[in-house]
Every structure is written in structure tokens, then in C-alpha cells.
Length: 160
Image 1: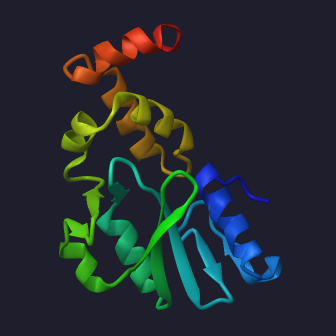
Image 2 (image 1 turned 120 degrees about the vertical axis):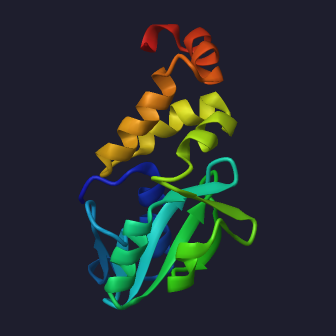
């Protein structure tokens, strides 16, 4: 099995337990959507953090270009909380229902400043396949100007 993060592993097991055969599930570590089932339904798996999911407009366009029915699957504490259809109009939204969309290149700093530092610190361990985004998370964690730096430094002294 290709290397999946914890959220993707959870969803993969969910698909299998739902009766979908292993051979009908395609996983893409460096492409979007994360999973294509039966060659016709795509799933981009996102961990909900502080009532938000993080994505990019480039990722949405890539998914839309696949010309298959696709969904964001928001997962919170290993529970699927919502399947959100991925459509063209999502590109103009800041939220879908109760879930905020954090556009990767637009409003990450504000997101990092609002989130619980421990969640952000632990979340960085689940980021795979997007080194640019992971670097931004690392930068936010090490940035002396954020309120999180002092808190994290105290909680995780040996990790910095």
C-alpha cells in the first residue's frame, strides 16, 4: 500500500468496510483527488481542524478537470462528519455549511493564529505529499512573532 497519512488510512478502511473491493479503490499520493472509487467517484480527504479544511484553488481545478463526481470528505477525530460535493462554485466560497475553507495561498496566517497550538503542532505530522504547505506550517510554528511560539516552546521544549 502506498504511504497514506492517518486520515487517508481511516477513510481507506471506511471504504473497505463499506463493501468496496480493494481492487476498485485507487489511491493517489501526489495527485487529487486522494481516492477514485470504481473509476467514477473521487474523494479528497481532509482533516477538519478548528472547524476548517485547508485546500487550494489549484487542487480544486485539478479535481474538476478529472471530469468525475468528486467530494471533500471532512474527518474529525476519526469520524466522517461531512461529504461536500466539489463543484466550480466552491472556488468563490469561504465556507460550506458550518465548515470554513482555508485557501492555502490566501489566508493561512490568520488561520494559524486562531488555531490551538497543540493541534497545529500535532497536525504537521499528518501532512504528506505537499511539501510547500508543510513548510508553511513549520514556518508558522517557528515564527517568533506568533503567539504560538511561546506556548509551543514551553510545551515542546525538546522539539525545537
